[in-house]
Amino acid sequence: ELSKMGWLLDMTKLRLGGIIGEGEFGAVYEGEYVGQRVAVKTIKCDVTAQAFLQETAVMTKLQHKNLVRLLGVILNKGLHIVTELMIKGNLVNFLRTRGRSVVTSIQLFRYSLDVCEGMEYLESKKLVHRDLAARNILVSDDNAAKISDFGLTKVVSKEADKAKLPIKWTAPEALTKEKFSTKSDVWSYGVLLWEIFSYGRQPYPKMSLKDVQAKVEAGYRMEAPEDCPANVYSLMKLCWEQEPRRRPGFPKLREKLEREMGKRSPGLPA
Ligand code: ATP
Image (tube, rainbow, N blue to C red):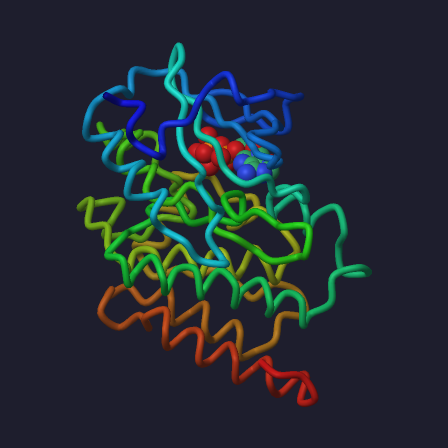
């Protein structure tokens, strides 16, 4: 009965290659599925629950140029999640290894805008990401930034393990009251902007997680990354408004980013 569902893939058609990454639940492999290059994420836990399968079914229907495309899943001694292969890896490593001499500031705007558009789409589908961070943004061969891991966080970490929340990326109301919303995603997006414009630095450098949570709650905010355009830093601070309602939505953020980008490259379409 399961095999009738289009998103349940055939294990025998999958050719597994080498390990390309290490995830929280297991290794990520490179591979090929009926001629297409794919990434295969293995999840070592009991996730055969109907709720999970339904969720992945929804995810296969999500299609946007800034979301990593989910081809389907394979159930075989655990779960394998098959997605399009993003050969340039995650955005943190990408920015760290290339740095300021290779990646121009216009490209930083481009990545920021890509993620913003992907988030706008997720919001329109009433999905909250909960784990938006540069490590979960992947770069395609044609240099587009795409959001990965959408939808999964909610199902996989069902017990919403508080100890596992990414403290430096999570909005205060989500940390203390488990109030996750598009506006808590906007907070994380602000941290992601900081990561992008600092070329992949660890947020809140040198601060312990405990300190971060206490200080942010008391109103402390990160300084602007080196050479960060003032208007971009203003955007970050808007994302970090204590009150979720005061934070801009993704459409507003996109508008502002496009305007800034337009100022820097008047010749190019935004
Ligand atoms: P976390 O929950 O901490 O974000 P995770 O368990 O979700 O981690 P991923 O972030 O999905 O694991 O994958 C780990 C790494 O594997 C990524 O940082 C990336 O380098 C690589 N990777 C994951 N998916 C792909 C893909 N589709 N194409 C290329 N590389 C990938």
